[in-house]
Length: 225
Image (cartoon, rainbow, N blue to C red):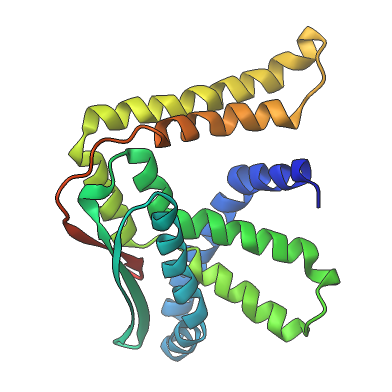
């Protein structure tokens, strides 16, 4: 797979697959819990690898932004499998970094699930293992209440900076769509490279806005509500 094809996959994942997978995953869990409690418990236990992957995605993105992480936990409470990662909240200095850390399982596992479905016919292992791996990704990509609360705390620390970073992200997104609409009218061919630069440029710019580290204060990111 060439780099430009992979970028195209990432864009399709961001624009189409992430919203679809998230709605489908949350709806699936809600329906199963209402229809049959025993089936819901079984699926909770079968989704254990997805919970582990969820926490690993949080931890991986924290390490990418050099945010200290503490204890990782995977627990079974009231027939439910939940996980958590301790994060140094005061070391999350930008809303962009907090956003990418909080929703890391959503976009990373959504991309993994999409690539798995695309490569399904070419993977050598048994179909049952493929199905279980897809189910693990499907369960792990869910956004938990802990994740949303954590992001709210990050935004609440510096509301003005949060608005600035949000603008820095939305501006290149708007430019990217203007490019899609305007390039043919101006006689230019569509280039996925220019589109990708416009789309991710604001995120990279705002993620680069770091302040000095503050005293440590631990909070929780995790899967489950």
